[in-house]
Length: 244
Image (tube, rainbow, N blue to C red; front, side, top):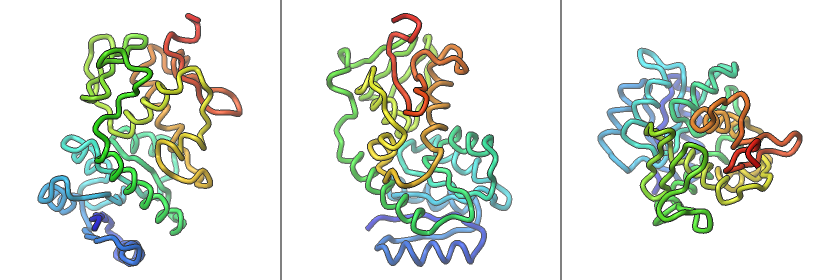
């Protein structure tokens, strides 16, 4: 049985989410603050299938909890909940390692759909021996621009500087590499990378593209590798658009 940890200081919200997740067949633990969340998580290494994490917590913010978890586990899916609506709040959430940022008040069916798909993705990734793209790999490494990526070991360096990407960021990068030169839509990325139905409306994809540009582009405001295609989606260009 999949174990979900809910970190939410509002008991009404926590109880409502817990009840519905238990109906779905999940085993659920609820805590009301960050230190308690870290205690539960660290006491059961590798056993938590997903974390539903409120942002506004007493004493220790959801940002700090997420960042602490990501220092030891880059794989566990984290669904961040917040009443904050500003773009910088979402970007900060993704920067510290959230997989999905869902605004309050949220639609319960959307939350349950996201949870089901994140848990399924977690299960599938555990069964994969490797996420290396077979037709795009060069030996054990893939190179573009100043980046060197090893999809087997999750080692990434840009201009000689080592970087740490989350599992989902690596999966998104892999998808772009596998479809190098092709236009991929947001709906396609939601379905193929996040495992979510395209009917879900989220800016998650755009925020993750911002992260990839920050990691790999010399000038993120003028991207050469992760290029926007107006009205369609994105295109990955290994050699850079102005080098073609």
